[in-house]
Length: 457
Image 1 (tube, one colour):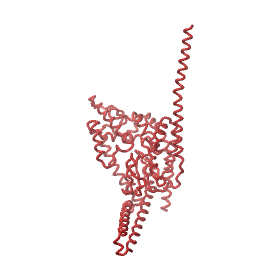
Image 2 (cartoon, rainbow, N blue to C red; image 1 turned 45 degrees about the horizontal axis):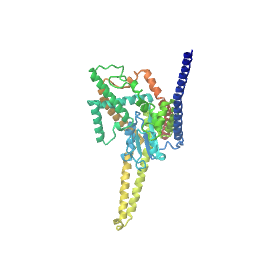
Image 3 (spheres, rainbow, N blue to C red; image 1 turned 30 degrees about the horizontal axis):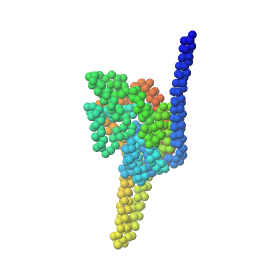
Image 4 (tube, rainbow, N blue to C red; image 1 turned 90 degrees about the vertical axis):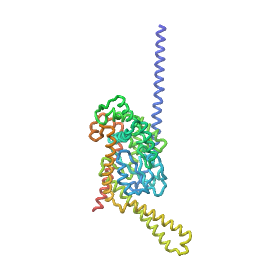
């Protein structure tokens, strides 16, 4: 009987130890959630503690185009903004580093993949923000396709080492900004490039070119299948809910020191995402313009009338002001006597006069020969047609290296429903933000159309 009692005591002891272990392990989890909740709420409260701009639909001195990847922002930059802003008025762009002085008087346009935290580096009261959002499912597809497409360009090299070295040499020689310098491609492309070479090497080792697949989004022998891609850590950190985190200022490229902890807390505890969503919605409310990729024609028309018209008006006013200054300086110079023209005062006057002439010329360039909204839309149509042809050529050349893959809308329709549902689940915040953006767009589009009809009457 003594051995029975011993067994019972030992069993009770093991049970108590097990219970203690469970409690010990559960406590940090509970505390971790509590900590995350405090961190996220503190950030959200400080972010929401900003009054709504009453004149948010009026263009300010600096225009910040918050370019969410794969939304068509590059088209707006080349085919709209470059038509009305001269090169001298653009803030030097870097996409991943701040290389300009925000207080620079002539800096009027910043187009970048930086998130909303960039506003902490800009003169908030003098900055207007615009952005474009896209259906989250389509944006995930497009991000995946572009990552593969750009990475495939390197397959011309015999191996990964050669590709990496050549890319490094080319970037060192380039004056412009490479795709590999731009967030998020500076993370996604090298990662996908390494995967492409690994799969190509595996095919060569097998000595077989037979490709088994169930569509362009599931070619395991050639590149990472979509269903695998969406479940990787890098996709969770950068791609999923990417628009919400970018508008909220919480990407892994953020300028805010607390952003990474907030983002990771939200990714770990989905319930905390509502706080981030509310901040992102308020950011959209404060923007000068919110466009939608899917509403291409309406978005372009509204951009031209809401943003383009104000830029043109602003540039004209600036040019007229400079011209008046130049005329005043010229009149003052003509009143000077011959003897006065020989002294230093004349030299200073000449410098001022020449500077005014240069400034006037630059602003004249910005107005692009008396640009109007109608001319801007015409220029946009021509530009976008040319740009799409060029993009199509590059895409075709890249996809040849991973043939028979051929990304298309038709191919997307053959992706299994279970994968589509998973993409939606992983991008729940983006889906909610997109719905909110649709409401903002509908209201602003209605207001814009009413103003246009009133002008035509």
